[in-house]
Amino acid sequence: MILANPVSLALAQGAKNNVEITVDGVAGFQDTPLEPGGKWHVHDPARTQPTVVKPGESFSRGATAPSDAEVLFDGHGVEKWQTMQGGNAMWKTNEDFVETAARGGSIRTRGAWADFQFHVEWATPNPPHGEGQGRGNSGILINNMYELQVLDSYQAKTYADGQAAALYGQQPPLVNASRPPGEWQTYDILFESPRWNAQGELTKKAVITVLHNGIVVQNHYELTGGTDGINGSVPSPNIHRRMRPKFLLRCRTTPTPFTIATSGFAHFTSNKTNNLS
Image 1 (cartoon, rainbow, N blue to C red):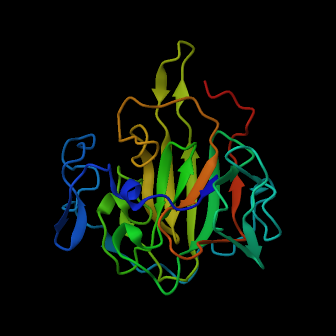
Image 2: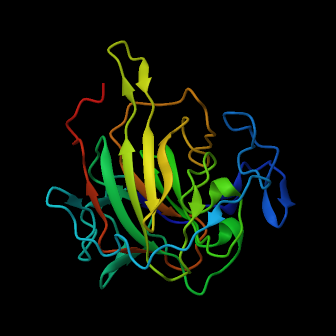
């Protein structure tokens, strides 16, 4: 997992030369590439908005880690993290959470794994600032290739494939299960890495399932190449690479600190020594 500081809003929204338009109060783009299937453009403002569903009072918030899980943050430091250059992470721990730090740079997990179950708790700034993609924007990235969007999507409009729990620029969440700004939210992520045969041919694409505040929002979704906004990539049906996933959680446009709770842990269904072929 990587935690990174804000980058430009233009990167979060689309390529620099794309022209932003507004459809029914939603800003987005219709001069971006078509997503696989050919119906919607990447970050298309006309794409149907997910239905809003109020989550239950509690699901996995504050959950303790299973006995075989690796705890990535326990409230007492960021030793499991490093900078992108391999140095010690410099982010600040406050009581039982860690928050983004000015000029703290990007940080990522020291470990790398194959298939896994990952639990993370997060909260966006309160009071909220900005609108659309400028409202508490972050993202959980796997191997710097697949991004699960983190955003303040509570009573806030943005393009469907860029709101909270979307696979950024590729697949909207099944529903909008967001809590209000400042409240702790949870993601429970199950990820299966792609597979190749002995000839190096792709035999199975990466698959992800996500529960947002206890509600299924991505159901065994087969990823179509890399998601948008990562190294300038856009969805492609033929882009997959061998991986031992690391995690990224970056705050791109959040004007105030973005926070991560103590109960973040990863439970691995296959460990770092497994052969992905």
